[in-house]
Image (tube, rainbow, N blue to C red; front, side):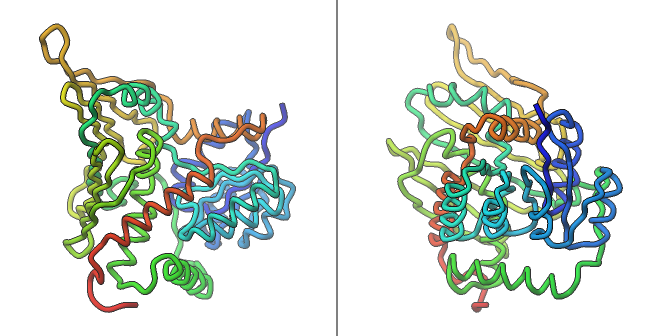
Length: 363
């Protein structure tokens, strides 16, 4: 079978750490045929490192190239880029967040239906071997009582310093202003006027970080019935939200940016009276570090605690393999834009549950 000719739009941190190396490792499935970035230095470095001659500063020029698919890993909302790629007849794998607004999501869905190509959202946790192993166990739990999601987030530099990530202070000022204006416009469309603290809560805490856990919760447990509570404090560095699921189960999501600590911690835990199941995730910037699945209960009158390493396979690579299978067979991906739309809708509800304004006057 012919390799999938793919272009990468946005060659920053996550592309350099995860996507580009995995595409090179999966050379029997993919041909990395083009790259695009607004930074001339990044574009030159990535093109030379990966032997890609087709380099573009404007993603629309890349979409005119003879490609089968694109991976969208540019910053902020990806809605317009994804729509344009689908209208150009490309298969699309989009990093999160797919978009900021429900309008963008609806436009992506309409474009995908018209194009008839594959559109998949890169929620790598859904392809994690530990998550796949835990899924039937979690769904079989009796008398589920509570779900806790805890993320202790250190500075990204503490998680990425061991990688050779190249950045250059050469993005044209006009491009910077345009990207910031686009972000502001989409955020106002999503939630109205906002303070600087509310910008951080929406773009960094919810849409860029908790979106992964919201999608994971929905994949494991279905949709919550309501958002009961959201609060933020410590200059918006801490956020807690409480969701109500069917049968009265509460999910507590806590995210804390701890700027002076280096160790990342993320745990998704399911609690029932007779058993506990926890997924302990590594930093998303660590390659080939497995997620730990912890099973706790009682057997033959004795308590047990078992730690399971389901596989050493990398979640980011597994999602690329799934994308390739969908492109080659035409089947619907596990993580669709329709699903991403519901994630964005829930994140909007979590944001609106905040006591506002947060952090002073409106922007």
